[in-house]
Each structure stands twice: as structure tokens, then as C-alpha cells.
Image (cartoon, rainbow, N blue to C red; front, side, top):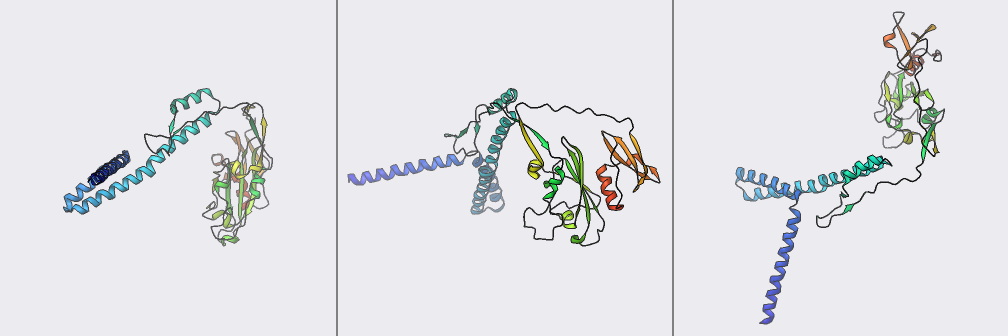
Length: 334
């Protein structure tokens, strides 16, 4: 009899423990994501019951809405927000470097901790402490570009690719393979030919730091220029690069370490005494040079007269002359 009583007591105790665990699990579930899920699910359940008077259907709507909202909130929205805040603070310290004022701003944002995206419960939070970087004897670099930087940039390009399968990586060239301060101008002599047999003149130009304005003209085919996964260009268009020198051509420059940063003097714009220079005779419909906004432009002719309002860059004029007037070229800028 005593054994039976003990067994009943043990069963009752286990039921109490099981109920307590269930309440604990329910409490963890009914956090903010769970509360939102139950709230939205309750609305769906109420509407379903009012419309159908079907208890089973209403309960199914409740469970479905709760599960959907809870999963999206718990595994998509909250981790994204917490991870975003953690990355933002890390970037804040990395950008601050040794600047004490900016580090103080990052400290005020931090307030001592950032809640990690992997934190699991409020009772045992995982705290990520972000230490500001301490730089001792920082090393600075001066980036020096090579004179043939544009040629080195274009050496790895396949200028006459075939119509291969699109899943071959690293073959098509596009804006991401060109630095942001470099632009390409596209002109075609025979746009009615097949893509493989089209002849394009592509002028690559840009102002290279420490060197100045540079340009190089390439002969390519239609797949190089017009492929939708590449430049997707049309005749007469200019496309500016979206990449960086670090990613597109690390061999185009040399970073030389220096002990202290060398201030880069701001070049003083020297306005030439003569701002309009006429060619001895028109070159492929161009009148001459015009100095404007710190650079020399090429002036076309309209009705045999100089059209200063439509002056264009040296790179565009070079590409136009190459395509329309083979054998002719612009003289050097004054």
C-alpha cells in the first residue's frame, strides 16, 4: 500500500515537473515574435470563425498564422537587426582608427556592449565587447601608379571572345572590371554584321592619380561589347567603371610605405593664356581645342563653323575620329 502511494506521488510530481517545463517553454515562445504571431493568428482565427463558424478551420488559421509570423520574426527579422547593429559598431571603430573624437562617438553608441545575433535567452545573454583598435606606430602608404596602368588593366581582357556558355567565370568583361575613375567609349564600324564579326573601337580613358589623363584604344568584337552579362553597350555610348583598382588591377600600382602621411598638395589650376586653339585645318569635322573647367575639350563644327557649345572630351573625339576617319588623329593638347 505504501509503495502504491509513493508511486502515485512520484507520478504527480513528474506531472507537475512536466507542466512546469511546458509553462517555461510557452514563456520562451511567447516572447515578442511569439506575441506578434499569436496576435495576428488571433485576428485570422476570429475572422475565420465569424465567416465560417468552423472551429477546426479557425484553429488551423490561428496555428498557421502564428507559425508563419513567429518563424519569419525569429529567424529573419531579429537576427538581421541585431547582426546589422553589431556590424555597424564594428565598422564605426574600424573607421575611427586613432581619432579620439570618433572613438568617443563609437563608445557612446556602444554603451559597453552589443547584443549578438546568437544570443539565445534573456537570462543568459551573449555579450560581444568591441574593443577600439590600438594602433602603435601606424604605417602609411603612398600609392604610385605605373605609366602604363591602362595597358596593364586591359591586358587580361579577352577582346574577341566567342559565344561560349554563360557559366564560364572570369571571361566576360563588364563595368565591375573597370575602376570607377575610368570610362569606356564604344564605336562600331559594321553593326549589321554578326556579333563575332563586328569590329568595335573601344577607347579606355581616365585620369590616373599622379600621372594625369591617359587613354588607349582597343579593337574588339560584338560579344565583348554587347553581351548582356558584360557591358551591354550600343554604338556611341560611354560607360563608367564600377570597380576598384585593388580588385581590377593590383599590378597597376605600387604601395610604398612611409613613416608619416605625406600631405598631397592641392594642384593650383593654371589657366593657359590661350583658351581656344584652332587646328591648321579641320580634322574629321573638328575645329580645334577649347580649355574649359580645367581640361582641354575638342570643338566640333556645325555648318563649317566652330560649335563651342557642343565641345566634347578628347577620349570621345578620339574614338569618333578612329571610327569615321581612319588615318586621321588629334594633335597633342596644348
